[in-house]
Length: 348
Image (cartoon, rainbow, N blue to C red; front, side, top):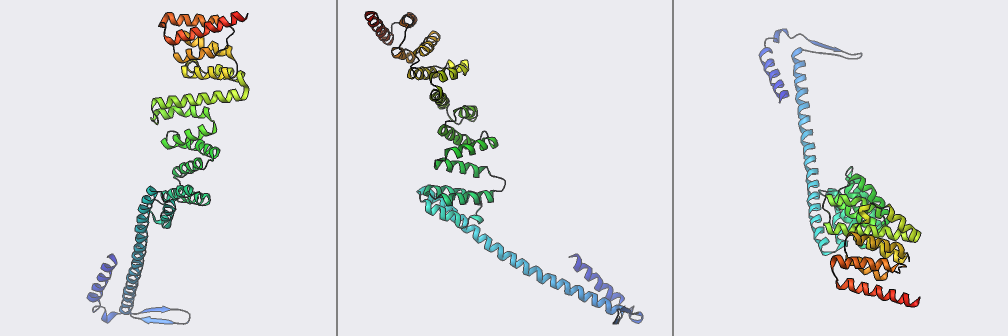
């Protein structure tokens, strides 16, 4: 706009002052080594104006050419995006139907033009995994990582999920450890960590993430408690497998008082000790627990104990009867002990 205004002003000046200078035009000399170019001032002005007009015309033509090209490219890109959107929607329907081959095909056909190319490739990777095509699964994961740029969390989560589905538990555990450093309270990361730790026997790691699970309410209180007990029992199994009764007792001693006073864990510990034929330690745990609170599950363990001191057990049961009454279970257990004691006395 400014250039047009400038040109218009120059034309006005030329029209107004041209005739005035007609008799005093002077001349302009442009001299080079081989040529001398002479012209009047008016002629030079006209040539400059013509040059400006020519340049503006060329600019106008080029601008329209490039604008048309951009519109054409935009039309093609928009068409590809529309097609990618339609194919993605169709793929989601096929995903609900369980047609994973079609899901993979539709998602990857125009994935680079989709609204979220990374999502297309990740879903295609899971579809390929469902078909058992490990090569394409890894190929799609790599492509998703490329288009994701700095947002690698969805890619890493999908990779771990696929590793768990493929039975690559230790690789999944390694991936989970890295994910927990990035997003320690991400619900899906914690769910995947739970699976990976249970499968690989990483029970201490599982216990470490339970507070985060509780904070985001990933599971109910009962579910978290059951998960905690499962982890502790897993640690008992590992200690028993490694060092037998001695390993169990050492592990039990290292636990906090709060942990040692949990009845479900006491019961599990007693059962492990009985399996290791360490009835003396098992009896100590049962009697110590019954002093604090009555629990029928503890009483049910007493007949299984091969105690060398039946009098202590009988005394403890009499105390329970005195405190809580002669329940059928207490009477039955006491009767079994008396019969066992009588049998031992007769044998002596």
